[in-house]
Amino acid sequence: MGNIIRIGTRDSALAVAQAELLRQSVMAHHPDCEAVLVKMKTAGDWMLDRRLDEIGGKGLFVKELDQALMDGRTDLSVHSLKDLPTDIPDDFPVLGYSRREAAQDALVLPAKSCSYGIGAKDSGQLQPDLSAPIGTSSPRRAAQLQELFPDCTVKSVRGNILTRLQKLDSGEYGALVLAAAGLLRLGLSQRISRLFSVKEMVPAAGQGILAVQGRKDFDKSLLAPFFDEDAGWQALAERSFIRALGGGCQAPVAAYASIRKKRLTLTGMAVSAQHRVKRAELTVQKYEAEKAGVRLAEMLLEKI
Image (cartoon, rainbow, N blue to C red; front, side, top):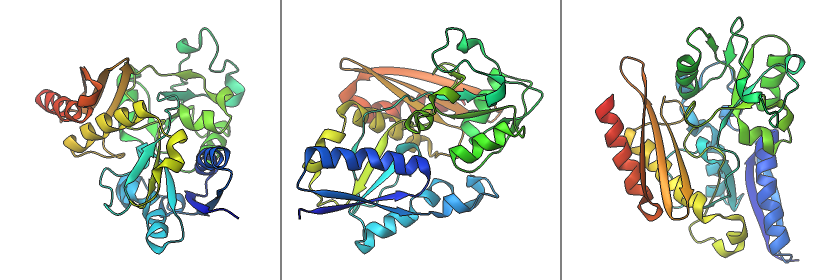
């Protein structure tokens, strides 16, 4: 029997589906290795009665996975990059990043009210029912929703994607805003009523990218087929911007980097003291990704 690689993951359906992508890549490219998933529940998965900013933020989704790495129970952890804190332990660095799935946020309407789906020609014109609240627990999404739909009511919603969809379809919400990547990875593309453009709603930094964390002495060559160079530059730029602003997943800040050939365009969003959404954009050579994040943060701070 070859080497066994233990991959730590949260036990939600989405997290397992994402970790499975890494497991399959390792098995396909290294038949001598056996990759297994080690599933666990994190504090962020069961503390659902309060907003994340009230109970510790994004770190609640990674603490148990970090502990498993420290204890030697796992060799790797797979995270949605948008949920990963910007401060990473030196002993357990991010080893690389997956190819990016769709980065946009998606409007999700109740199943009974919309049968368009992501491919419909006029889906971009679909609007939420403003007589019922729009569900999101993200201050970033809430701020941009209020700009797009000034008359809307935003109501917090917690739980995994399937739980949120059940709450939507039962009539508790008129719409949800969710990451398109999560819906696509769960095979739920038919629930996407429309995608918000980056100009309408700047995504969370790292949205759609998976980060693989592990011991610094882990042989990264085993994971090379899973990693994507451009996603690495995007992650560096976006997280540099968020770090420079001192924000996280529960702060109303956002960043998205697109790459065309060797040029990287970084779009950033922050909310002013007057609760106004401010955006800025910067284009650089992609190898200047980290500096671009800092510079864009400086540009936005001048606006807010």
